[in-house]
Image 1 (cartoon, rainbow, N blue to C red):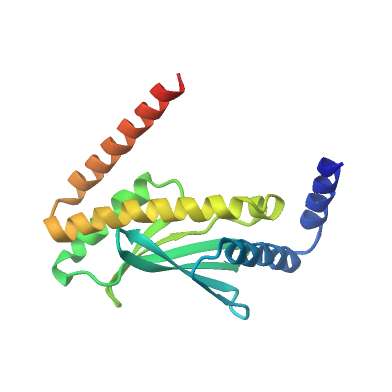
Image 2 (image 1 turned 90 degrees about the vertical axis):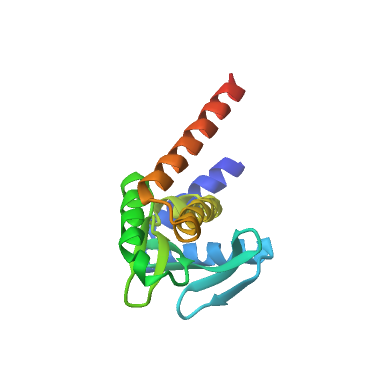
Length: 184
């Protein structure tokens, strides 16, 4: 019986107009944040939720979650600012990330001197399966931590972007191999 009710809920959610679909997903987002008891601010008019999570140990950042243009937008400033002399390297590192990321993009804003990570999957999956909002949020957070670590290394160690990306890919390949061995 539960499966039938779930099926009809999905049919209803997919059959309403786009505006109503966005509203349904927005309500699911609010529910997720309220039930999770995160430090969040909910802004109904803008359909924006601001939550504070750590991007590195003892380094909080404001993460923004929004619904507009039939997309679920997740964004965070990776760096609030970066040294001007590293602008070229910041762009190169962003280009490397954007080439390997199959979800989201790293944006370097030169006018305001910050680096941002933005994911914007469409609403079709969260509309049908609201629990995926949480997994998208987790993916965005996990990826933002990796991106932050890379940019931190660029700034603090003045490491070349290609070396940073190579090390990150090596680390992830080793992690995947360990997981595969564990599942055998």
